[in-house]
Length: 225
Ligand SMILES: CC(C)(COP(=O)(O)OP(=O)(O)OC[C@H]1O[C@@H](n2cnc3c(N)ncnc32)[C@H](O)[C@@H]1OP(=O)(O)O)[C@@H](O)C(=O)NCCC(=O)NCCS
Image (tube, rainbow, N blue to C red; front, side, top):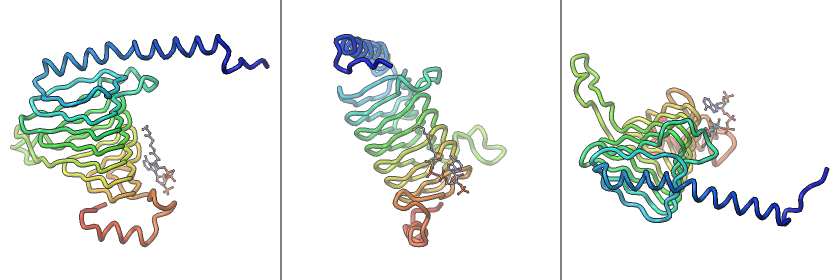
């Protein structure tokens, strides 16, 4: 089989066309983003290193703080998913996304208080972050706004596809949340959690959950899983 030379003029030309096409295809998404920054009522801070490859919807009257080299959406992922929703709903609500973090297509972040995503975090597609129940628990309180508490992801957390992170959860640095997990309790640093409700199934610091790791989890105080 004949393999085209990687440096052949044809290959280089194709590569150049691909690069130009990729850059141009981002322009409407950037325009959509800028339009919403102007008209959504949300206070938005970001710098020019922001990379957008999937539609983003900004909604709410709170604040959105986006760090450097943040990546919103991925063009090779499922483009049929809804826009990434960044919704700091109330005047005091803050969503912040740390430097070099990436958020994939269809993810929604809804804050009544605060959702903080640390630096270098990877958030998979269709993940939900909700820092409020949005309804009271008692039968006659369903019309009330319900309990709320901030969500925090420390540095270098990876959240798998379709996970749900509910109010008050802190996910420790380097931890992994498995696909489709429902995280209701704090996750220790380096833990791999999965399932509904999410439970520790491993550690990124060792292949198996060692006794030492287990006791560390519980000694950490804020680690409830
Ligand atoms: C969490 C994850 C990284 C764990 O990978 P791993 O360390 O290789 O884990 P293993 O496959 O050894 O599984 C360990 C245990 O957890 C269970 N498990 C792993 N992922 C699970 C999940 N998402 N839900 C429920 N259980 C899960 C396994 O069944 C296994 O259980 P067992 O010990 O009783 O057999 C991986 O399973 C996962 O969910 N990846 C997400 C990928 C993704 O969504 N990417 C999106 C792009 S960002």
